[in-house]
Image (cartoon, rainbow, N blue to C red; front, side, top):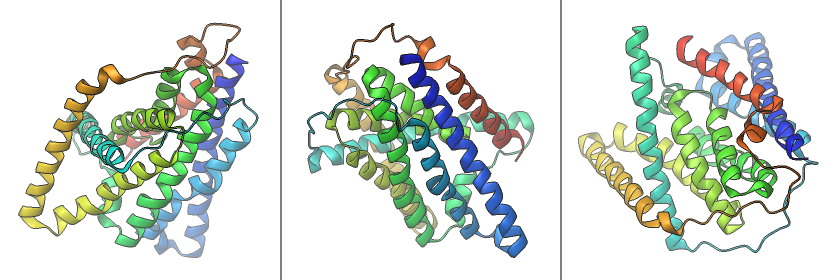
Length: 299
């Protein structure tokens, strides 16, 4: 059962990716036939993202729906104060690991002799407030959390919190398919998975994800593009503040972290080889690797 679970999860993620990309390709072909000029609009790009909602998520569900999950555990509500602290911490983690992605892409840009475009930043900068709120701040966080902190996490959770956090977080980072987002997406994936495991509810990670995306797609752009020098200075001070807070809180709270082991007794040890070195997961990682290369060197 153990090997089959991770194999099916890997194939499910692979099929989800193929279904999403195929739907986006078909959508592009149809758009080109109907109105070629529409392909150059931000509306086209934002609507392309929704292919993941309508094709990627259902495809993953078809693959994993019969895999075993844990019995429901008691929910532990997260009060407003703690939720606010979690938001500040998550923002700090996002900014810290965003630095790693930007540094790597700066190095790659120097080596290849031209800048690797950050398509996400370009999209949000060129998008309207409507699309940034609807797609980036509301729809995507909800769907992504249902995929990675519900469908996936529920099925990896029986093997222990450590594996569940690592597997879903890394899968979440790979799903973004570019180095600009990989590091911070994986990092906040770990945070969201831990919060979901401790509270027993995915609603908190959805709320945090929505707020983080809103801050990045709306507040940050407003501060830098409309706030002038003062807005940029205030934003920089805030970013530095939450990064310092994230480091301090990580150190202070490190001893309080509790990771539960496997929920059941399994027929074989749950090793890294079992989790990662199976056909489904290897193929998913390989496919994501192809897109990482394409999005780094072919744009």
